[in-house]
Image 1 (cartoon, rainbow, N blue to C red):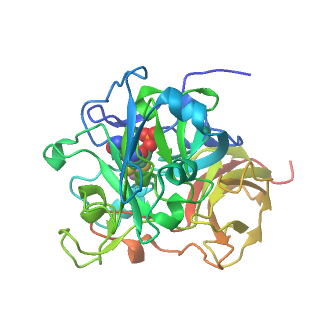
Image 2 (cartoon, protein in one colour):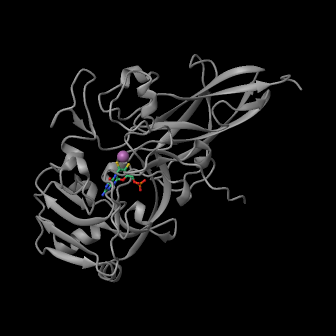
Image 3 (cartoon, rainbow, N blue to C red):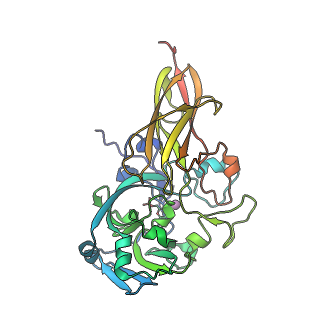
Length: 362
Ligand SMILES: Nc1nc2c(c(=O)[nH]1)N[C@H]1C(S)=C(S)[C@@H](COP(=O)(O)O)O[C@H]1N2
Ligand SMILES: [Mo]
């Protein structure tokens, strides 16, 4: 195995926002820690001492409580899950080609990655404190205080039904390593199938509530606004479950390949509690499609790698991919139809351009 350092594209150093090249995501179930994207809203990365850290669980519960890391480990069974995280801003660069998006990070296709997360089930913790069955949502509060929220901590929520689902973890380990500070140590939430923004890092509070979080990152940001709307508080639709998406991960965009049989690989992710049922590849701009082979999935909450063998004539070919999910959702062709004022959810057909060299029969 070669262990060449991954060259991350750093969109901003403070807050630290960085993504790997597509190649670093290709052909493996788990994304190595040094190739996992970073999405932060605050300049300061919290450095929390695991020895003194405590999780507060309150709101509409019978017995509000705090748990140290030791208590979480001791009182609740450990579980692990392979889960793909994906930022709602992933592939924003494709929307930027349609129209400008001032102030938004120009993410390429690397704001996604898959890890094995280990910790306890949020559901077990919530059952322990006794949830009011009339409550509707569960909010997560992080220790970071992004500049744009004027001192308020990072906070978002998920519906109670999702919070009680067995796949939602309070995780202290990533790929069998201790959770790195940058990814939320000592404990973060992992909400499989939902936009990355709901997987709160540096978790300090879990609050059972009667409605969705009114925090900035749910009431203002991470909302899908109509294309003609100005970004404004409370408008648009909150983004929750991820939309079906896919990418070509190898060969690299712009690569030279020998003409003839060329293997192409990538990933597809269904989002929500849907699964990937089909991936198609086209070399004629979507006029005709060939079905790709789907690899076995590491878990129902992880991406699914696919591969296809193309027969490329000498010259330049644009390879296009689209995925279908178990709700018969399919990726739309055109980013122009998807453009929105905050630049979220670009799940239009993904593509790379390949230059085939030489004689197709040779
Ligand atoms: N406390 C806190 N949690 C957070 C964020 C943040 O800025 N602060 N960013 C969110 C967003 S938008 C994403 S996409 C993921 C990114 O997780 P990663 O940096 O571990 O890849 O964390 C989410 N959780
Ligand atoms: Mo995100």
